[in-house]
Image (cartoon, rainbow, N blue to C red; front, side, top):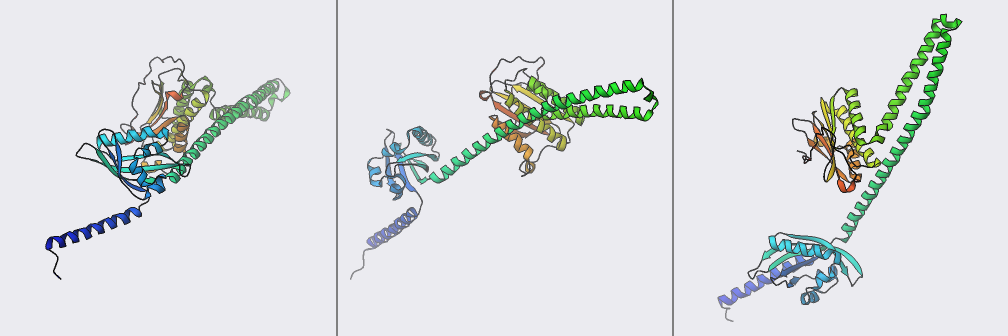
Length: 396
């Protein structure tokens, strides 16, 4: 038997090697979850699928031969509400030759069901001006449904948190008023009675008894201290100035903070009426209270500034100090309930809370609430207002 010509031998070896490569490719594709595909968009807008793996039927409910013959069927599978985002993502990837990463819903007629799919592919410019993508489609229905359930759970938790805060504030208001009206009234009556007894003692034979007079003075002083404690507790539960608006309440709070801590503090606002309803004003006030409490406990600051502003697109509250600043690991501590509570209140308000470094040291707590979540009302600028619209710096 004569040997094969050299060229024929090379051809057979090349064919065998090519078959091995194809076999490896087929093995890889068959073990890849989802659908491996090639997709081509031509300059005239026509599309085609030069390659579709065997996963086509399992993922899309359409045999690969049918999708080869009618490539436009893929767009028809996508739910109408998601088609535009699919087309926009395709065009953006084709223009910039960036990776195409899209997720959306398809209707699988074979199972009368909706699936979430994700496609990831890499574009290549072809000589004739067409763009070809090599990629993979996968079924992400389970993970997407879990993600949506997590979002719904978070939304429900946020609603519960907001409801809890409202109930808490209502209860605080009720207790504060009862303490002020009932206990305050009773203590005032007791003080008047003690004053009458003291006057009678002065005009009676018992006036010469110093011990009795000392007891009367003690009771009178005790009533005064109790009235002061009642007033302080009522203010802590709910400042009556909140009924006059957020600006008045914050101005009072900053003055009280300076008086109690000895830290030089300033407050400014650019509007008399910020346009918040009672619940929003209370929530923003509580955020400011918590921020000031944190400064008093941890910041070692000597100066604090609180600025409230009603701007064109949002309401802004900024609390700045010149203290030690807050470290990144402090923000992520599991027990950082103060920061978490502030952030959650801001989120319930439809806004955001950010922490950043103040220039020269210290910390800036910035809360921004979009104006479309705030009730619009006519606002009069305050004389000498010091806040102008500005971008809040990001954390360094």
